[in-house]
Image 1 (spheres, helix red, strand yellow):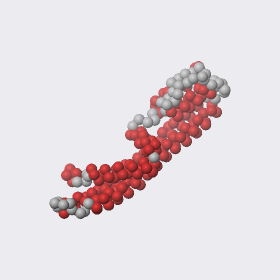
Image 2: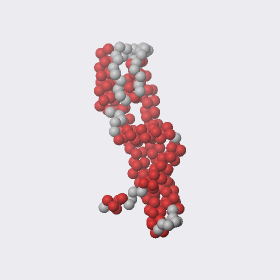
Image 3: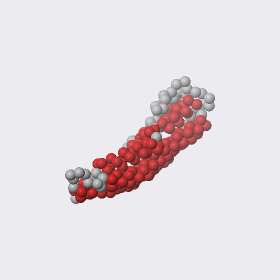
Image 4: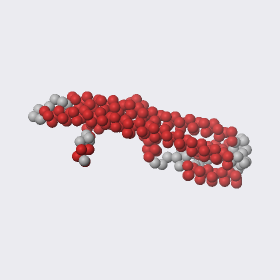
Amino acid sequence: MPSQFSVLFDPGALAIVASGTVLATVARCGWREFGGALRMAAGTLGGGFSPEANRKALAVAISAIQRNGPRRADPPLPPDRALGLLLETYLRRGAHDALAPVRRAERALAEARRINAAQVFACAGELAPVFGLIGTLYGLTQLAPVAGGSAAAAIMGAVSTAVLTSLYGALIAHLVCFPLASAIERRGRAEEQARDALADWFIAGIGGAPSPPHERRAHLRGVA
């Protein structure tokens, strides 16, 4: 059985398809978008948004605000950037009506990043079979036997490369690129729902806290 699977592995054919797909995707989408898509894909494998850690940080913030008011409270910011910015905005301005624009802006930014990352992998999924076909054409160009070599061996090697590059193109597209695009979309939507729920919970929690409408804090921690 292992020997049967080993014939399906051709490093040269795989390199043609993979490197061609990456280069073409970068050329079409740009290095910045490509790098952002890789970071988003890495986030789907682990880490990312932590509802529990952010809820604990917001609970501490609510307690501090209710105890000291927004002008004197100085709680640690939540690990999530959007929620941290929401808290920081309230501590600076002390007004509930300042939070809605922040939420809309952060939601739009997160959605744009998610869509861009998914589009990058969707683009790669479209390009991978193209480079599988290019690898097939390259393999067919190797049909001519080399001097002093076996014609049968040269033909079999060329046909093998031609077939495997098409296979690799389809596999990379449908087992890597398109699934990653879908995973980024699903995880992004789930995180946005969890973030919105925590933001609503935080705003409800500070509903009774003193909130001078025009007070601004002189200095606060930044949000990474």
